[in-house]
Length: 284
Image (tube, rainbow, N blue to C red; front, side, top):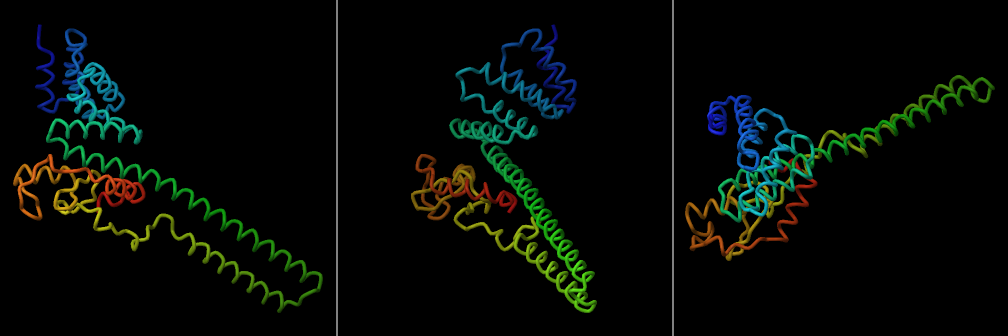
């Protein structure tokens, strides 16, 4: 009997993802229906094929088959996060990505850096979704106010014309009052637009990231900051990468180990709140 898993692996490495999926499916149907690794492999293959629902199903099955062995479920959790994100289930995607990230930290897996970036992308998408809704609400409000202002102007002009017909006001007075009403309407429209602003144009003056939220190593916004004995805070994965290469505190140059790092919860909460309201900062 051919080894369908190995054939699937060969097709995957060659970029033949549809063929790889077929071989992994054959393996599941014949000998590997209880093997979480084959479902993990097919989940990744389906991600490459952009079959997000299929990838979700396989990733969940892999997690289920792993059972209590949560320390080896990093890949299916990460694949599940990717599949959910593409289906716009952003909250679920973030939860799965955070779980994969935590497993990386516990097992010292080098994928932590990649997953950390993915978490930031999810948070950016969360913000974009909220921003889209905000813009729609603002545009609707602006259109509604402008409609009301126009209706008010037309009502005033109609009343003015009726006064003219009744002889209560002359032609010159009517023309002067009409010009004044139209001028006031224009000023009100301008004031409304100025107060609300252009909902699609951000205030660039507000687009500043506070220094204390920026990782001194990568100069990017942090989401999982840790504090060192010297009192400085860094993004966890960037500091761990530095420690693997140098083994010293970036500032004091004294020996530093992972055990000495403490999660900076206050700063983490500040970073989370900032990113929730300023998703653009992911690409800052």
